[in-house]
Amino acid sequence: MARISAGVATSHVPAIGAALDLGKSREDYWAPVFAGYDFSKQWIADEKPDVIFLVYNDHASAFDLKMIPTFAIGCGERYGIADEGWGARPVPDVIGHPDLAWHIAHSVILEGFDLTIINEMDVDHGLTVPLSLMFGQPDAWPCTVIPFAVNVVIYPQPSGRRCFELGRAIRRAVDSFDEDLNVQIWGTGGMSHQLQGPRAGLINRDFDTAFLDRLVKDPDSLADIPLVEYMREAGSEGVELIMWLIMRGALDAEVLERHRFYHVPASNTAVGHLILENKESRSNS
Image (cartoon, rainbow, N blue to C red; front, side, top):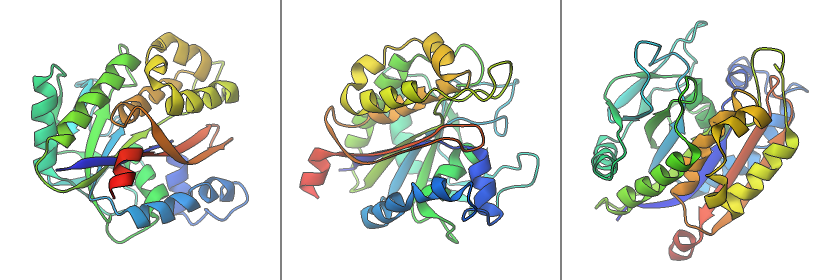
């Protein structure tokens, strides 16, 4: 049967992708950011996932004000790279896993989570930057990817509790898929940051650190933080952290923290990163 072996949480700051694409990753400003992922690159090369279920938010590339799905799952075979106004990133197309994606959609929808099915779309930095941070600059991504887009841009966003319970439903769906697959689930976005208004540039290290601690050790209570608290404490874009709760909901109650990284600033944003392994999957591997 398929299994979720690990979860990855990471920021998806667009400037990180630009720094990598423009050959600036060794510059003094950017080098500490990329150094925080050195362990992660070796770890994922050793783990060799077959599929990554990647939770991210679209930035007006596939969706705009004409259509705003709360949750959208990519069930297609291939996803092109979006042009976000300065040309598409020079990274490989993303290859999907339609069989597993459709299975998850079927299972999760029947449990009461209404998903939008997407068969054709381009993916933007929300999805490609995490892949670049973990895999570098390959000619082709070394595994298939199921994109899962969450609305964290336009009110009303889903609650943290809804996201956490959705993660649990995704876990049940993967566990019931009759193929031997090593699946990872990634939650992306965040951490504290605000891009506009008088609080632009806001960073709340205390909130971010507490969030990382609770995500590892006490995710169930963390899921009950109201959306207004994210916005008040972590900035208007800090609400992206609810996507990390989908990842955490899909893991065991007790997990092994393999890696943690936190850095300020990266384009006026707090960068956070966690690698969490399911202990049971580790013991059976």
